[in-house]
Structure formats: structure tokens, C-alpha cells
Image (cartoon, rainbow, N blue to C red):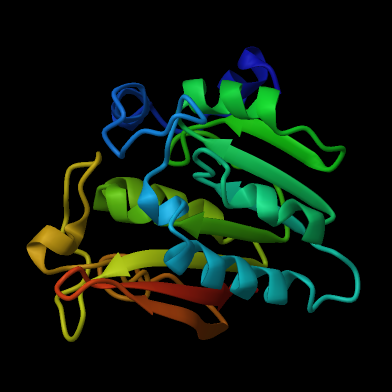
Length: 226
């Protein structure tokens, strides 16, 4: 998919999220590392968080007799995705940050692996059996989330991981897209609730990882869409 093809696949006017995310990576606002120029934060590297997630997703992917195709939407620095490629027929890493995608293309090369720089809320998303979105939607405004959800209906399975408050909370308070999430507003994402009402056939919570006291919980949920 070249730049011209990307323009043909564009379905909405650009949001400012792309510039914001590229700046986050360039300035190391999610942290830095001496081993790579871009870093997706401790949530994509800390073993306490990453290992259970990798095991959970790998278990799901290997449950199929024939490997399925996966689209990793918001793949970031690919520290997690690189550990899942082996369990899939085809793996597509997508991120809005062009600097990160350019780096990933150089560092991670396999026959069944491709990377695209796309804005999830603007561009046409690649086809696959399953979409993974790990701590992606939590950074976006409700308008952008709705635009993405409209496209997620094309996947058979959607696996979402969201950073949520512990206990009861009011879901889906709107935010400005960027580095922050709804946790500061004692809110979190629930795509089944207003204003989204994402229609699915089945819902299964696969993983819940409690963080430090007062820091909330990471919840991974599998939605069967068709």
C-alpha cells in the first residue's frame, strides 16, 4: 500500500491524532529506552502486564485448527506483536505514527508480516479475521472511537484491552485525543454502552490485570462480531 493507495482508502477527513502521537514518540513522553528509538511505555514492556496478555492472546490464536489472520491496530513499538506473529496466518501491524512504522519495517521482517501507517479513524482498515486493539481506544475522543467501531464490524473477532477504574464508574466520558486517558475522569471505555452501542453476538472477558493501588485495572475482552 503506497501513499497514493492510502489516499484512495481514506474514508474521513484527518484528525489531529497523527501529529500528537508522532510527537509523543519523538519526545519520549511514554518513556525512553536505550535499545530502541521509540518506546510504547511500560504497559507494553513490563513483564507483569505483558506476559499474561501474550499468553492469553496466544491461547486464543492457537485454538483454531487453521491459523487466522490478525490486524494489530495501534501496534506501537511492536514489542508485543513480535511475540504473536508466529501464531497467525498473516499479521498486519498498523499505527498512526509514521516514525514508528518506518522503524518497525526495518526491525521486524517475516513472510507473514506487514506494516501500514494508517489513521484508524480516517483510513480504510486492512482485512483480517481478528482485530487487536490494546490500550488504543482509551487515548481517543468518542468521535474517533465511533469512526473506528464502524469499521470493526468487518472483523469476525475484536479483542480490546482497556485501562479502566476499579469498581463502578461512568463509562465513555469524552476526552481530547492524545497522551491521556479517561481514568483521570474516573471513567473508562465500554463499547457496548452509550453513545456507541457496539453490536456483537458474544462477549467474553479474557484477562484482568490489577495495577498498583489506585492505578486501575487492565481488562482484555473478546467480542465475537458476526
